[in-house]
Structures are given as C-alpha cells and as structure tokens.
Length: 269
Image 1: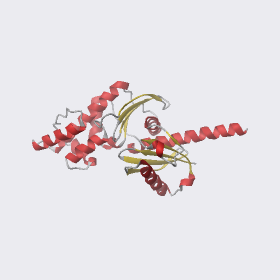
Image 2 (image 1 turned 30 degrees about the vertical axis):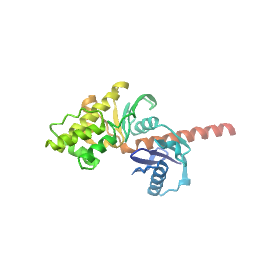
Image 3 (image 1 turned 120 degrees about the vertical axis):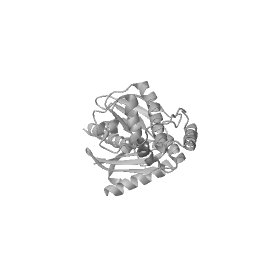
Image 4 (image 1 turned 180 degrees about the vertical axis):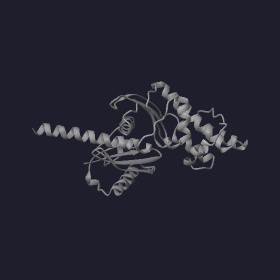
C-alpha cells in the first residue's frame, strides 16, 4: 500500500512515496512562488520516478508552509512532528533534531519512541537559515552548494558578529574588499551560523544522538562548526537530510490510514 508525504518550503519542495516500511522514491525540487504548484510538480515527479499513478496512493499528508492548501493531501501536519518522525525512522537513536530550513530554524527533542518532547523555533529572522547562506553565496558570487567546500579550506575565520542577514552580506563585501580569502570568509559564516543554532539548542537542551535535517545539513563546514560549538557529534542519516520532513509526512500518512482503517473495521463488526 502506497503512502505519500509532500513538504513545501520557501526554497524547495520535497515528496516521498512509502510502501510498508520501504522508501520507494523521493524527489527534491526548487520551489515556485505558489505552494500548490510546487506540491503538484514535485508529486508528479516522484510518481513518475516510481512508475505509479496518483490513484494508487492510499493516503497523503502535507507539511511545510503551504500545507493547508495542498488539494490532493487528505491531512496536513506541522513540520515539527514530521521532522521528528522522519529522523527517528532514519535513525531510532536520534534524540535531538536541528532542522535548518530556508527561512526558519527549529530544534526538536524526541523520546525513545520518536514522540515529541520539546521544541523551539526561530522564524522571526532569516539569520541562521538557508536564506542566510544563500544571501552570503550571492554576495561572494558562488552557488550556495559551493559554500561548504570553500569554507572547509579556511584557516583563519573572519569574525561575523552581526545577527542580521543584510548586515552580514555587507560585512562579507567589506572583507572581500580588504583582501580576505573566500575560504576564511566562508568559514567565518559557517561558524556564525553554528553559534546562532546553538542559541536555540540551549533553550531546549541537547541529548545524543544529534542530527541536522534540511538542505543546510549538506554543508559540511556548517556541520563541523555545529559539532564544535555543541560538543556533540552530528550523526549522518541514512536518507537525504533534505527529504526528512516529507518522509515523516508519509509515515504519519500511514499511521492515520491504519488508525482510520481500524476504526472502520471496529464500526463494521
């Protein structure tokens, strides 16, 4: 039986297809300004990848910023629950999840069965998010995917003290004009983001094992800087960290379907 999860964020959209306890297919695409369009395109793409039709999906759950508007989803659930559920499936030992999204950052604590214990979220400012890194990359005239490898070559990180993304971009321009290397600037940016994440972590506490979800998890310099500031290893997941929200949505779709099916059976007996 096929279950689907779709996660529509500010920068990317993800879709996952799940069967029994197997991840069938997943897709990550750049989001459009319209969340319904993003969800439709990413779902059509993952269905084509799996060679399936929409009619074969038993239940679909949506998450992300546009989750309430997705017409083909039977239910919508917050990113907090979905990232917790998805990370726990990928690694049942995970207890702390740091989700660095396009325009917010969340720290989630779960228990030994994957249920939510506590969380904190920063959605008031783009600092410490994917938008922050995207802005810095644009200022440095590189693609955001290049920031991690560049920063790993840094040896003397520049001091990034501003908490504002716009001011940080101005600082980057100043450092470039002063002749500082892109590598040291990239390393300074990675460490600044890690410090901002750490401020959130301190509000809910940290417990091993720790993972990072979202596209920023693919920036090795940010991961390494976060490990340093937290004093905890960041554990890699056995799935693409960018699909964890959609994966959790698919898992919750299965749970809701099974619960409703049990209720139907009970009512019929």
